[in-house]
Image (cartoon, rainbow, N blue to C red):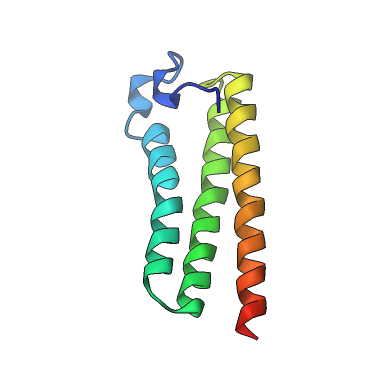
Length: 105
């Protein structure tokens, strides 16, 4: 991950500090937080449910990053790096969910 902090890029207007930038940060924090919470429930069904919630936050993050790129708030390289990393995380979580569902049956 060779990209800068999104809030460091000069083109993001200060008015977006509590808008788009804040939303991106909340999504990014929500992903691992829901994974941890689901794992801590000690229930396979709850774990799978929280992994799905994490996936939803990941899709939301992908959308917010794309919006920032389309509004020209972030450079193409930053968008590509973040998006590619998010797709890899998406694949890993999907695989984990699939394997956990197989264990359930």
